[in-house]
Structure formats: structure tokens, C-alpha cells
Length: 417
Length: 208
Image 1 (tube, chains in turn purple, cyan):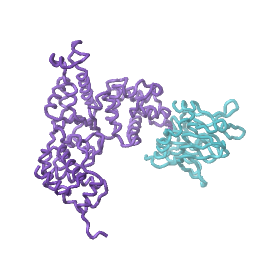
Image 2 (cartoon, chains in turn red, brown):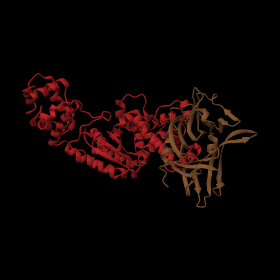
Image 3 (cartoon, rainbow over the protein chains, first blue to last red):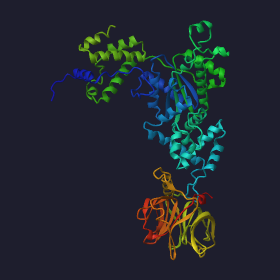
């Protein structure tokens, strides 16, 4: 039995062995984050939740400068609104095959494991086929659906809701095959989860295209979002890329001279660059998503100027769509108290994850290994920017973990600056 | 009425009769034939009618017994006329389970017949036995009349001994006290000596 133990030194030794609790300073849509929000952000989060819960279709801009925690907000929303299907997309990765990639993100978001993803999809196709009377029992027992009749009924019910009738027919065919035709069920399921299919598989399903075809992907996205049991929120990060994607480089002759290009679109009487064209197309596609009932869209932007520019673009396309745009919610910097809480939240999470329970016994009310003065210094230096705060904390903890100097000496450097 | 439990609507042996209009999943034993229907009406004057039921059994054609299934209306004016042995309303839970188990991918190579055909018949001098021909095959939509009851199943497999094994089945029959019982079984092994007949229902006849 230990009569005396230097608990502080033990904690430092543990850190030296395990490593720093602060490692990652950029949040991404792929890696899950479980650390909760600080107090001032709770209120901010609640404002967003209120908009989500009180409205059906909208675009909600969130404005925050670099490193303010816009992406982390996605994880906070996901943790808080577990009854919603919240899907993260980054324009950088989905601008090509926009609907197909967005659909793939929705499917991936349905569950962590592949079998968990398929289950909501199966429930949806079953429910839809029942609505189309495919589940009717002949003579009280036999579920012998007349596939052509079911298709006709489905088409009749849905034809007013969908513009592209060919795509709608393909989607209906796949859904009915999935539920009513045991011999095509597997192929139909592969089609529905967005797998790439060869011509042989497609012909077995009596379909010409898989979901890579733009119109089919859009129709399927609409079907999925409108018929899943959970409401959907699409979180589009760094939306200003829609503008930066389209810097006009052929506008003036001076600029043209500076850039060595083999192809100049102005030869064909157009000032549109390929980037310009792509971003226009992506913006059109995003605006088309408003036709999907119940889809809430959150966009994050670095500044209000970007928002104004995007609004002007939307206005040029369709003024009515501006009505969908909600008043932006501005993300503020951390206040000093937030840094204290953020630091404690992270340490609590870190020591819980490595099962170091002594931390909660002996350090639950202290800031050890740092202290209040160091955290105040960090806040001041980072000017309240969360990413800068994390960078400072990474720097300090790396020094604690790797240096042989005493803790007090290390921390002295972070008192006076 | 609530269909959460199985309900005997008519039992000739125990003089049980329930008056009313019933809808749901109903199995009736009619002589040595079986009627599947989604309705039955038993009036206060004991008139029994079934609208658009599916009757399944063997009938004589050209001095041979041939399996058949056909859609038909039935009407019996009074109890003396009624040839039914019993009618049972199967509970929603049982039918749901029966339907749920049907479309599994575990049996992808199932044989579906387009038209109703007899797989097995053991009736006096009339015999039909195609069990050996279908050994190790999976046949969809079998209906069987056995010594004391009826089996309707999603599929039947003829095992290596040549005996039928029914999968995903609803069984209706009389127990040793002649009371009518209903059960759902995932699979049932039956010795072919206990079987009066097995008929495979044709998809086309079900679609009519």
C-alpha cells in the first residue's frame, strides 16, 4: 500500500507515457467528435436547433471565421439531434456527381455498420410498397403482388410530385423489385444503396442506369429524404467555395497575359471558365434541393460578405428562393470562461478514454497540469479563436510531454508571454 | 372485430357457430377440400356465404383425380346444407409472421409453378407421387391435407428420404379432444403416410 504518492507527478508521467490530450486542431466531417460544447456555444446551438425544429425547408447560414468551430458544430448538432438524419458534405469532395455523392453520404449516415445502413432503407421500401397495395393478401393469405399493377398505382400517386417521369419510373421499378421480387431483391438493394452496377445487373432489373445518372440520383435522393422516418438536415461546410471555385481569370487582358493557357474560352465568345461553369452547376443543383420536402440545409461561411455575394447570385437565378434563406447566425469567439471549460471538458474526456480514474478523484476541481494564469494567457494570445486556443494547448502539452524540465519552469514561459 | 387471436367461426363437430360478417385470413375445411378466403358471413338464420374464395383440392376428370384451385363464391342456405367441417379466422400475428418469413434470401432457388398441380395423393385407389422427382428441390406455395388437419406453407422441401418438410407454415387441425387448434411452425417434418395430399398452388391461379 502506498503511504504517500505524488499524484501530480504520476499524472505527468501518465501523460508522458500516453501522449498529449490535445492533438487535433482541425475538425472534419469524417472523424467523430464527442467533446461537448462550452457554455456560450450551448445557447448558440439552441438557436440553430430552434430553427431546425420550427421549420421544414430552409437554408440557414452560419457565419464564423476560420477556426471558430463551424465543423465542430456539425458534431455537436449530430450528438444533440439524434432523431434527425444530419449529413455532412464538403463541396470540395462532392462537387463532381453532386447528387450521387450526396446520396452516398445520406446512405452512409443511416448507420455505422453496412447492415445498419440497409435496415432503414428496407423499412422504407416496405412501407412504400404497402402504400401501393403490394402487401395486399389475396384470398386472405397470399401476398402475390401484380408488379405491373403496383407500378401503375405508385406512378399515379407520385407522378405529380416528380418532374422527371423516366427517372421516377426507374426508382419505382427498383423499389418494387426490392420488395416484391425475391429473385431480384439483392440486385435491387445494391442499386438502392448506390452501388455501381454493370449492364448485366441493370438489365436484370429492367433498368438502364444506376444512381450515377444525375436525374435518377436526384429522384432517389428526394424519395429517400421524404420517406425516411427521420427528418433530414444537410450540413454544407465552407459554402463560400462555391464562389472561390469560380474566380474569373479571363476577365481582363492583363490577367490573360499573365496566365499561360492553351485553351482560352474567350475564343468562343464566352467569359465562362470551366471552374465558373462547374460552380454555377453546383449552385443550381443545391438550389434544386429545395424541391425536396422537409430538407433543411445549413451552410457555413467565413464572412457576411460571402453570404451577400451568394444571395446576389441566388437572386439572379430565382428571387423567390431568397425567401428560403434564414437570417444568418453569427458564431462568436470564445470568452475567457469558455477556455477554462473547454480545457476541462477535453481533459475529462481524455482521462476517461484512457481509464485514468485518479484524475477524477484528485483533479476534478483543478486545472492541473496547467493553471488559470496559463489558460488566461492562452485565451489572450489566441484572441478567443478556438482553433488558436487548441494550437496553444497542443504546444504547451507537447512541451510537458517531451521536455525534461520541471513543470513550473515550462509554465513560466506561458505566463508572461 | 379484433383479429389478434385465432377464432373458430364454425365447427360442425362441436356445434359451434359465430354469427356475423368476418374479414381477415380465413381457412375453411370443405369435405376433403380447403377454402382460403378473406371473408365469411354467417347470418342469424345460419346462412353461410363466402365471396371470392380460393378452393383447393382434387377433382375427378376423365376417371382420374386432378389437382385444382379456383376462385369461387359459396352459399349455403342452412346448416343442414353446409358441408364445411370448420372455418377458422387466423390471427393477424400469425399471418404477419407467415408473410414476414416468406421473402427471405435463404432459399433463392425455389421452384414456382405457374399452374396448380398435385405433388402427392394417397386416396383409395387414386395415387399420385412425384416426391422422388422433386427430391432435394424447394417448391413454393404448398397446401396439404393431412390426417387431422391442414398445412399451408411458404415452401416444401423433399428430403433425402423422400418425405416432405414444410417451411414457414400455418397448421390448422383437431387435437385428440377434437378441438380446433391453430399454430405457426418454422418447419414441419411429415411422414408421407400421414398425408392425404399435397398440392402446389400455381402463381397464375393466385393472381386471378
